[in-house]
Image 1: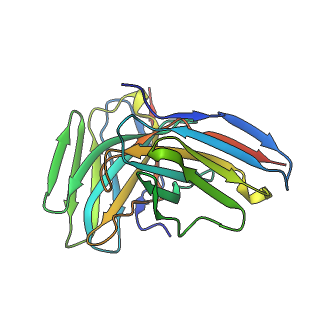
Image 2: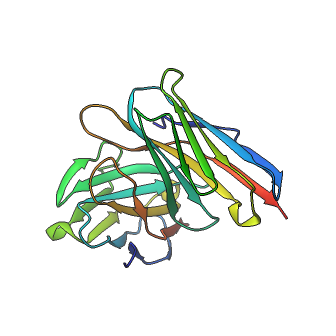
Image 3: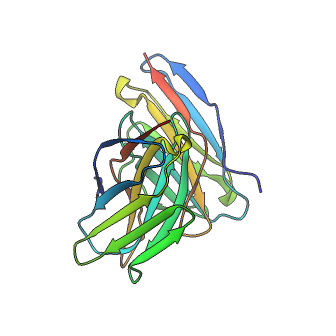
Length: 113
Length: 112
């Protein structure tokens, strides 16, 4: 069974530029999550989708971050414009349903200069 | 906000020893999950324990849950160098929307 795919693996941008991350979850998984993980901390949930609907985006900085999950499968997370404090690893995860164990992708390491 | 708080923040042991790490949380839970994260990689789900369970085993892993104390512990027996990683607990609250919240993690180093 293929795991959660993410791209790119690494991205370096200047502040005020925009960036987009892509995630392909495990086939059939209804729930998709985007996390931000700052070095030395635990993952912080940014947004959770159930199929193609948003279940929780309470910690998503909506003035600069946006996410969508088209047709309930792939998802993209965008930052526009980026700030220095957005430097982190962005993790995508999926699970068969809410509240059960998640499968994580390798993450995208973002550096904002 | 991070509900789970792991203790200790860092742990260094010799290969073959047992490693115990703890997680405390604040609100009632539906279940609690443990994850491992090797350096520079994504997280791997280890084990899930439900609120009505007190102990669960998976290979060299043993997880206990004490809902009266709102705490859980993860025991890794006969540790190996490959167990070197950060370990996170994640809680799923009871009732309503089941949002997973991760703790701050315990960094385990197993010395060969």
